[in-house]
Structure formats: structure tokens, C-alpha cells
Amino acid sequence: MPRYRLTIEYDGRPYVGWQRQSNGPSVQQALEEAAFRLTGQPTALTAAGRTDAGVHATGQVCHLDIERDFAPAKLRDALNAHLREHLVAVLEASRVEADFHARFSATGRAYLYRILNRRARPTLDLGRVWWHARPLDAAAMQNAARVLLGTHDFSSFRASECQAASPVKTLDRLDIARQGEEVHMIVEARSFLHHQVRNFAGTLALVGIGKWSADDLRQALEARDRRAGGPTAPPDGLYLTRVTYPTERGGP
Amino acid sequence: MPRYRLTIEYDGRPYVGWQRQSNGPSVQQALEEAAFRLTGQPTALTAAGRTDAGVHATGQVCHLDIERDFAPAKLRDALNAHLREHLVAVLEASRVEADFHARFSATGRAYLYRILNRRARPTLDLGRVWWHARPLDAAAMQNAARVLLGTHDFSSFRASECQAASPVKTLDRLDIARQGEEVHMIVEARSFLHHQVRNFAGTLALVGIGKWSADDLRQALEARDRRAGGPTAPPDGLYLTRVTYPTERGGP
Image 1 (cartoon, chains in turn purple, red):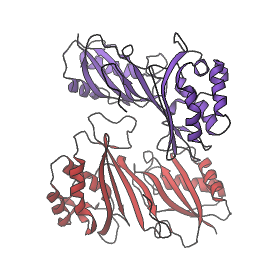
Image 2: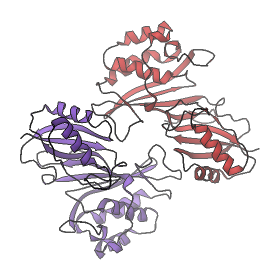
Image 3: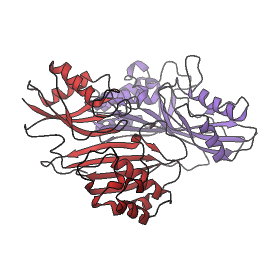
Image 4: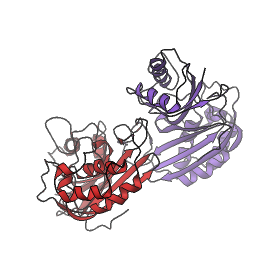
């Protein structure tokens, strides 16, 4: 059966997350129902990252097998026609080899975390940014964040319900910069622990307001204990922006 | 009575427009009710631009008179506290002279029009961009748009319900450029006719898809007849981004 790779964009607000759950609509369900309506066959989708409720994606990747041979652009347009009721869209589709696996073949994942840092609440970006009214020192956050780069036991930034086999991960990039009224955090790694990016954001905000020093952050990391880390930032500001695979060059 | 100037941001989707109307909630009503709850006095607000239903603002300006003497930052925060149920926020407040008038003192207005130009529908930006699936040649649009610069009778781009005394306006800027998947149009003038920016966007999209040449656009302008202009683009992509006043230097 031909295997297809899809690049997916979604607004996480109306969904319980990527994965199917009994308590509400999921992105996976929306896409699987679209594939069923298109093919008449129950079709399972596997994604690179199982985003949580309220988390957005501009570059989620998933794969599916379809008996019929579709031109990739036709598959994209046909799935989108069946997704009209949803805040989910297929940006790109391509034929891939049978051994391509959206989750297990992935060698890198990139996330953006957006903080709206001003006195006034968000209006146009409500639900799409973390609103943080106290001024943040983005340069201090960037400076402190360097201690997180590389291979570490990230237990201090790991949700209790995390199912990863090991708390040791390698952080390849963590860039923080002010963009007008917003502070953007870009993180890249092969894979992440559950809530790792949101726990980074919540903790680095403590550095941003001057409550924590760079040394406090180092000590929190070295404690290897979730109680030593800072709070979990809300899902609103989190975007899965890119998944990379070995055959590709990593783009910006 | 002290006069205050407010800079306002709003998501236009839930509103019938800036101005109070009997058929639904308006931005003006939301702000006037917040001012009433704060002061206990009926308070009228006057805005620089009466945006239509569904049109957004990131830099609307309005003024109001309040008997009490507020520190501007306190006024901003107090109004925002009363705006929590709304997609309207006060970004800045300042004390101004009694002869400042948000509408009549304004010497320039800037709008951004965002077109999402890709095959897939918007998800995160639904209602905040005009979705245009056919590829647009932004360079051809920019080249053709030059004919609109300067002082002209813009009757071909004027809504029939326009209340302006004259169809002659001076267009100071019209820049069109691709930004990734989007095409952005930035326009600046002292003032605009009703639907002028949306009629520019709808007409220039005809140039973008190659249906109209730059010469077709010139002929449409010279016809001074709405029937010669192109279609009206939807409100979704339109943002009032800045209003300038004589005491200020024009920013970017």
C-alpha cells in the first residue's frame, strides 16, 4: 500500500491534543475521519509529536497508508476538502518509502514558544500566546538558557506523567529573543520529555523577571527533581514548527 | 475635563464594526461600557477610523473625556480590567490637550491587508487573513499599484454607501510584498474612502493572478466608476495599524 507523508497545521484550541481521547475531539480523529471519508477505509495516522491540548502546530508531520494511488497534491486538496469543519489543514503531501515512520524516523523536532509581554491582554492572539504582563529581560533569559544546551538529565523539567524511557535528552538549540511586544523561544532536539518546552518557558520567565539567576537555573537542572524546576507555562504559546528526517537538510 | 487619548487593539470578528449599531456588539460600545463602569458617568468615545464589521485594529486611536484625573497607565489598566469579556484592549493611554480630536486631528492612517496565498485553508489565522488559493505575483501587483499613488479621483474603488464629501484622496504609500505564504499590502493616506483598501486588495489580486495588466488597473482608475474597479476583498485581512497626528514624527 502506498505510504504518504503529510505536513499539518492546526489551531490547538478546540482539540484535546493530537491523540484520540474519549473526552473530546482530537486532531488525529479529525484527520482520520477525513481520510475515511476520502477512501472509504478505516485509516490510521501516526504523528511525529503528540501535542497536548491547546498546543498548536505549523509543521506537524504524520504518515498514513492508502490503498489508492493518489497524486500527492490531489491527496492534500481532497483531505482539506473533508477538513472544512476543522481548524486542521494539510499543507503538503508526498509519497514516501514504506519504511518511513513519522515518529520513529524523525531526527529532530523544533518548537516555538511565544510570550506576549505587555500590560494589555491579547485580543487578536488570545489562546495563541502566553500573556506575561511583567517585563521580561530576554537577554538574561538567553544567557541563562545556555546551561540547558547539550546532553543532560532533564528530570527537573519533566512532567510526572511522562512516558519516556529516560530523562536524558540532548538539547541542540535554545534561542530566546525579543520580537517587539513578544519574547520568542525556539528550541530544537531529537526528542523532548513531556512538558519539557513549557517547563523551560515557565522557568526561564522566572529568570526574565529577575527572580532567578542563571545560577539558580543551573542548580535546578542539577537537582534532577521536578520540584526544583519552575512552573509549567500554558499550552497557548506553544507551536510544533518543524520535524526533520535523515534524508533532509535541516532548514531554518 | 481632562481628555485622554487611547491606542486600541481589537479582533474584529465578534463585532459589527467600530461604531454602535442596533444589530450587534460594537467595539465602541465595549469601550464606552468599560468607561462607564470605571467612572460611573456616560462617556462617549470618538475614534480615528470607523472600521467595518470583521476589520481588525492593532493601532486604532480614540479619545474620551473623564472628570476624574487618572494617571494614564492606571486608566489603561482600569479600562482593560473592565474589558476582560471582550477582544478589545487598551495598549496605551495618554493625557492630551482639549483640542485633540482622534478623528479630525489625524493627518495619516495606515492599514495592513494580509492575504494568505496557499492551497490549504487558514487554521490558526482563520478570520484574520483573506485566503487566496491561486498563486499571486506580488511583484506584478506592486508594479501595477504605482498608478494608484498620489492624488486621484478614486470613485472606482469607493463603496456606494461612502459618505465622504469628495472621491478625491491622496495615496501616500502602497507597498505589496510577499512574506512567506502571505502577501502583505501596506497603504497610507490622510484618509480613505469607504472600502477603498479592500477594493484595492480585491482589484490588485486580479493583477496578481495575471487576469489584469497594469494598464487595466490604470484604465479602471481613470473610469471613475465603481463598476470599472475589481471586487471587494473580505474584511478578514484588514488591520488599522497606525494613526498619526501632527505633533508626532511618522514611524515605520
